[in-house]
Image (cartoon, rainbow, N blue to C red; front, side, top):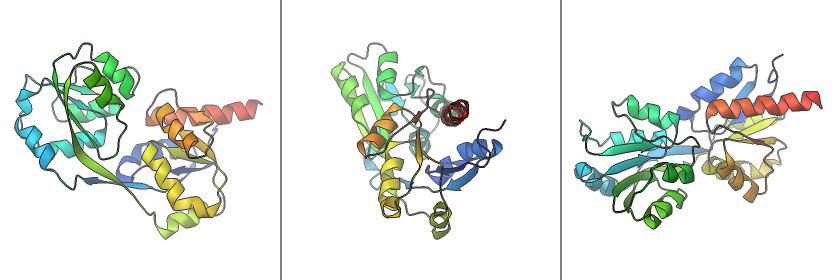
Length: 248
């Protein structure tokens, strides 16, 4: 039985990053409404990133916390990557983005959040670490690393901005929606800003607990939270949710 057949599911991820989850949902019979609530742009001031990359071989490690961070950093990287500079990735998608650029991360935590990543690094006392990040991001990783004695250079690699979806996308919300998926706190904030006037009723599905915290803080309930913080994990969590409803 296809548990998602006929379900109208909204994907709020930026268009470029939405292909995978949209495909998985459609394969399971869902009607997907693409409603990107944020857009990704290069840093408006790239000079701090450029300055850091000019002395890349002076860092003990570079830590990437998203695929976007990899992509926007690599726009300025002069290959080859220095062998003396280790690389860590927050999760498998970020690690894959690095491997396609012929860089193998030596650390990928089993739980794809900043706290787990910091723990997986072991001792960072006196290490120099470069952290290319989004313009708006949780300070958790930076704080944990500096508290552990690392010398961290945090630079903006890309920016997230609230995006207004197309009129057709808005029209697609009107009949009803069953689930709205959120893959970051910024997608939550963007969705609320763009749709607060519509009084929509929907079930919230979050890629992990950090995103769920933002959703709950914004006044949403979050009955669906992925156990594995990936697109695949989110789709599986949605399936389990509807399976449990069928069994109730």
